[in-house]
Image 1 (cartoon, one colour):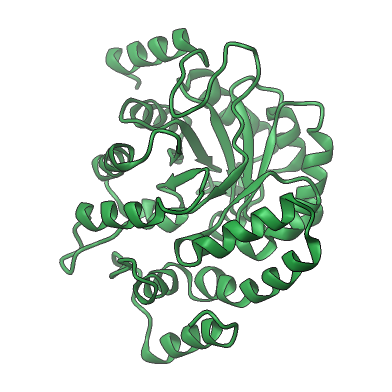
Image 2 (image 1 turned 60 degrees about the vertical axis):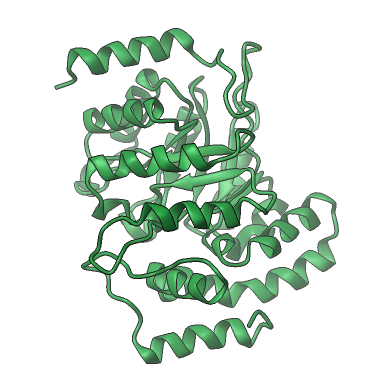
Length: 327
């Protein structure tokens, strides 16, 4: 049950509404926050004894801060958030907030399986510095996660969140897509500002853009592998794991798309597809962390039960980068 302190925090947040001005977002004019841009989903570094390595986290952030990202996502899928305790999740957000330039957005993954737990985590993450809550679809009882159930869940979270909410659909991990009809309904909520769609279905992304065009609602691609295609159909940016490794190149692809240099964008997109697939669908977080080690960041080990790459997998990962001219 939500305790008195949590309800007090909720009330304080709601009384502020979107009128506060933090890290560059504003809003007393009735418009939702603009989330356009590129965001790396930050990994959670661990020590050899599987403790969160906050020093390495801050070192990575300082290096990534040299690129023109719109902000950073923490406690997304690449942050291994299901393997962290609640206190670790909040401390990671707190440390990132302290290290982040004030002009960068901090999107924090606050999704939990129950609506109540999600509300509590969202409020807590706002208290430690999150600007926007990224809320993944609850999925343990996916067979009962109908459009009605998901609309009710997200509406309750958005009603009680002191910060804006971004929907998060990642079917590869949850086993379900947030239905388009639910997205359209939720886009009308004043505190729901957009969606991160990681499914890779560009037709679906285009349909969401089309059906929400009358709302102040934005779509972020959930991967660099379909970033160009997403921009072409109306997405405004991306949350891209590959940006943890090839940050300059992902930002360059953004610039080429936004300035209409489609031929050059196409050439660059082609060279990013295999490395992106390698650090997402093919080898996942262990692949991303290994690539980070190669490119001057700290990747380090994953937390169990995830296992590091085998030598054979590592060689295949390397080939996906070298064959495209990145190593």
